Length: 194
Image (tube, rainbow, N blue to C red):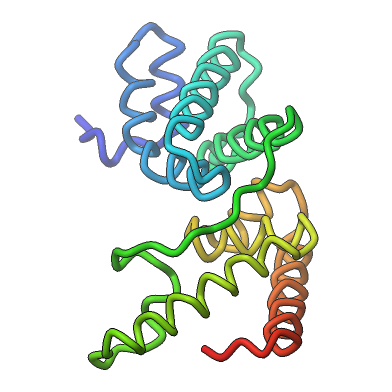
């Protein structure tokens, strides 16, 4: 008998369709962290992220139950694409893309820049600089900002980003390259030192 860990996503879906209700629960638990993190990094609001996360899995359940799921072997990218589309829908309903705020914990993407012990003064300067950079990210075109956020904050690979945004890997890479180039120009323009 296979352990739950060794059972593929597709096999769990097949089991679910045969009446094993807990198989879908296993799938959700397997991918919960990745899906929620991706949503949260896009919307930057825990309540909204939880709502979109729930909506994502309601849509997944409806699609699987109706027999319309046919993404064999690509369950996670399919779920991430649903979550991504629901995030876009959220912003289209009138919400603005949030300004990324600096964090006080070690999960901040910019916290790795200087590993030596820093003074209070150095920390204040660094946090102000990073806050300015995060605000500059909001001035990037939406497609570039989206790839940058999913890659840096969501930890997605370029293949996963390509699957979620329904573009080629080369397009994802290109958008990231343009985003970083545009960000560098903005940093130079506003004389922000890191």
